[in-house]
Length: 302
Image (cartoon, rainbow, N blue to C red):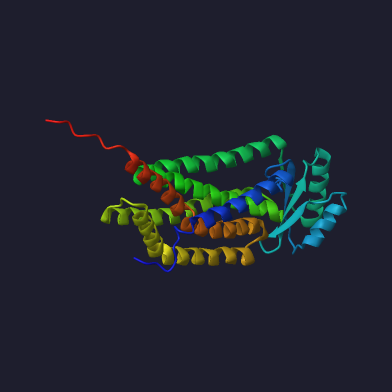
């Protein structure tokens, strides 16, 4: 059977592209590091509820009159709410000044929350544990439902997608916050779903034919990808539409979430088509080679 495009034949090209992107990401992480938000570093948030329309400039001016410089100001609601972030924890005196001033100015006392460095480290650790637990769960499920080699390929592709989001955020110097972690976990679920669909088709095609050569194995992988390709592309396009809508029409507070979602969706579609199945093919090919290289035991003489 001939195919318009041979995915398996060009697998090394995909591996090299991913390896280069990962290497660039690692270099940026080591040199510049992630731009952590106050969710992961010491900082304070001031949530203001006003009885008038707010602007970023007007809110910043109010804090400047108190001798404070906000890290960021994000408007919410009908622009009558503001979420103001500060790097470093506010002192008790500064909190008292803010409460008194904002109550006189806007008629309501703002709510102020502070994140200490210890809490930030705990949040970062919990985010790492969440991805780790999700990966372990996926390995167990896929190994039980399919086979161990598919489980390994799935998780490698999944970690590939998660790391690419981190790498792009590092390169573009976009702030990493809790919504970013939510986006990474969302992509973990999306990416594995697309990969499982392709693996399910591979399994069904493997049941229909006896596979004893690498050529036959490559044919089945190519056929399975082509049979699920339209579905994968249509799915990612529809989800991207939703992510783009969130980016342009959503609140500023979820902008980083939307950006992470777009990056993850793109790499998720790429890995499910070009990485996961090719990794499984490499592992399965080695298994076939081992079977063929095993010596055949001589039958006992009668």
